[in-house]
Amino acid sequence: MEPLLSPAERDALVQAEARHAAGVYAKRDLMLVRGRGARVWDARGREYLDCVGGHGVAVVGHNHPAVVAALRAQAERLLICPGSFYNDTRAHLLQRLGTLVPGLERVFLANSGTEAVEAAIKFARYSTGRTEIVAAMRGFHGRTLGALSATWKKAYRQPFEPLVPGFKHAAFNKLAAWEPLVGDNTAALLVEVVQGEGGVHPATAEFLHGLQRLARERGALLIVDEIQTGMGRTGRLFAFQHYDLEPDLVTVAKGLGGGVPIGAVLLGPRVRPLKPGLHGSTFGGNPLAAAAALAVLQVLEDEDLPARAAALGAYLREELARVSGDRVRAVRGLGLMLGIEVRRKAAPYLQALAQHGVLALPAGLNVVRFLPPLTLSQAEAERIVAAWAAVVG
Image 1 (cartoon, rainbow, N blue to C red):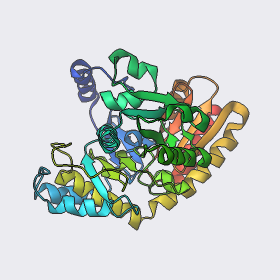
Image 2: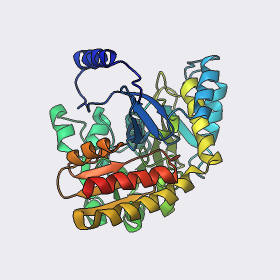
Image 3: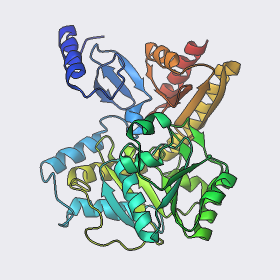
Image 4: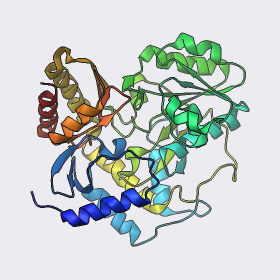
């Protein structure tokens, strides 16, 4: 295990980041400096299976050759082109995104999931002439003020109140809790198909179809947040496709750029035509991010990664539950979006997993979350199971 940085270099850089960073992230004592596929290496040269994946970003793995080649070629040609000009790479991406799902033909390009949620909220308000948004308890949609207003967790919201007015929250998977909140001033219902930050809770088909029916009956739009669940993560390109939903707006980000910041909103026919100047983004749809997204979409298709996610996800759910026994409350998820609800805090489990060469995430206080690249191999999946068995054994 050869260090990739000397101990002195590593310590100096850790101190520099600690001194100059704003301080909004709780740090783990790891400096990651290299990645390939489903694996990353720290400054000391130790290898890990990366089930953090940039919080679900690395769907095609780290440094996929096709993404690297696309970025290199585009960087040598044109890095930035504002939306007021046509651009060839952007046009190819818009065409590809606008034909992924029948009916979702128009696309707005942004730089992140939060920006995509902000845009979807604005488009819903503009389309309906209404102001209220109903979102789910335990839901997470971002940290800018509009997206934060839709997010449930008190610790995220409270320091920045008062937030944007007009947001309401109802219990996830309980349609009866939503019905009295959806009225004449409701612009949209906003929901994740699988709640990520909220504990890896999949929605039921009855709940999702009930929300869609409720939106249609009462003149509201249905926004499906696919920021973490999209790009093949759950075993379909989009998680809502498991349930044959027809959302009016779909927010996409994370995995779409393969590590390059990008966000998008897919718009359905019930969304009113938008006017020039109504919304915009300096970097949204820049050619570099567009090139990366095109490469990611091609890799997902060529390597049939949604099907791999479905198969390996089913294997991991079964095996993780088997080795856990009655030592955990539940193992749940969809595709390669997995959560293990433990009987005490998740943090010690995350630390122990890292000692066994697997990096994972929390999803609340007592859920261990796994978001590995969809390029994960069977042998790597078995390594995850072995590491978890050692931690809970």
